Length: 126
Figure (cartoon, rainbow, N blue to C red):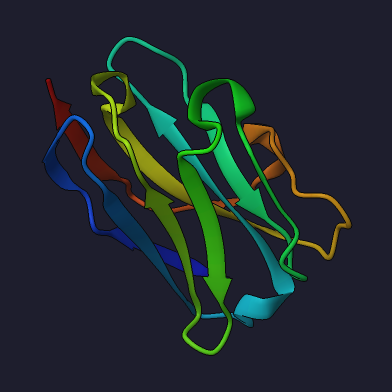
């Protein structure tokens, strides 16, 4: 069973950047599709970005288009979320998630993910 640990969150001013990392252990990382979700206070957890085992990625075009990029390094068992041009509305707890499958397209629904990290807080000040 894969375990996931996020890091890299923090407080940043609007317009700034952060890079989140999610370190995986306990399983063959390259066999898992990976995703990032976020949850703001009082809101449902929403899809941010995902990447397949072969590196095909997709992001939530409505909320993070052109600003966030997901990537993975199978040699380091890590998936990243590079966040640029941050806005106050990006403030949320960011979760890393995984699913065991070699799907052609990245999965975007919460219920398609089987494993979750504990989350890391990102706060963007105006």
